[in-house]
Image 1 (cartoon, rainbow, N blue to C red):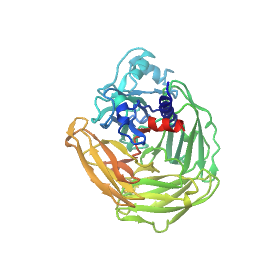
Image 2 (tube, helix red, strand yellow; image 1 turned 90 degrees about the horizontal axis):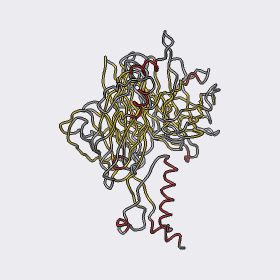
Image 3 (cartoon, rainbow, N blue to C red; image 1 turned 120 degrees about the vertical axis):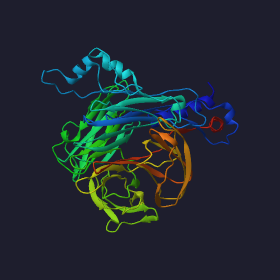
Length: 530
């Protein structure tokens, strides 16, 4: 094997080590002649996504959606499949002393769905669940067209999925759940995410009014071991069983946060550290009075954070922030509005003590206009994680959602399960103007894609009038691509009104990491020859 090949393989191996689950094919030798010493950018050839168990409510109605945008240069073959993960937690026994899982095994029903959204019915106590886990819940047929299935009730499963070939680059999945009543009633949405080894969740709670679950999903064939750390207003909370939590292979494990500590606190930061293996992680935060939603992980600790897309009609905004180190920090607070960066009166700076979680009520921060929070530590010297809890609606009929500090949309990102009404795409460019292109895909049941281009001025947030597929039937995907400038941050809000309550959910749009830079072989060879 020559040195050129070795250099290329080393670059790809390093990529896989960083991302945890990515692969690319070797570049076309003919394309090397067109390069001028720069790295080649190629579509990712393999990737994975994990979706947590949607709900424990019998009233839950969940839609799973999957989509891959059309990517130039992608392979012409491949698959993208989501399958049910095993549920690890022991079920409660019924009055006859027989577990609910045993009864489900006899009936061949575990709530998972096939390609057409129908329950699979197979006999046998254990065989039915094994067969069901192997059967696709959702499988893409072609790039550029989303597919969706429904799964109702508390038995809708967590999902483990992989995509390769033409489906890998930009593959995105989403689950959206509506709960009509009870704790956590409202609209709950979360984008399925890749496995990782560390997560931060500021904005969780162990208070009596909240029921917060940390959902852990293991995609691999070996067990993962996880440590869960909780930080409150006075520092780290004493936990009883937070260390060495085992998540069995290809299974999902919900952990009720209030069972990890005796301390009841309104604002808690959860730190998940994986000792061995890797997991997907998300917090489901459910409130007795103000509904609930998913709290995705915050961007990595940083001295500069952006929390994009606070709804313009937000009635209350509560910021929860945490700095992992021992140093205190005074955060500079700005709101990126449609007209530019402004400083909220009375909240110009917020003081954080090292290692302690702090919550700040910012009121009706946006005052009827689109907005994004921009947080900055002096000189960027102290890393911080943060999230906001947003309330919409009048007292007694309010719903809540969470927006964590987001990663920038460097090239492309996609939001799924959009409808003709009730979809808001919010885009901010806090440090410099940008041009973006937004494409509405075909619908899940029909429609013609549409594309629009927008200019986002520096320091502003805009709720753009996103395109809708012509002749739309079903739901559709919105893909945002940066064309110039930046950095850009974006989020998507889904909203509908049920019984006078404004149900809504907000998902930040991180870069889909569908393209990867592969070292130029000829350039690497020249370095080795020096």
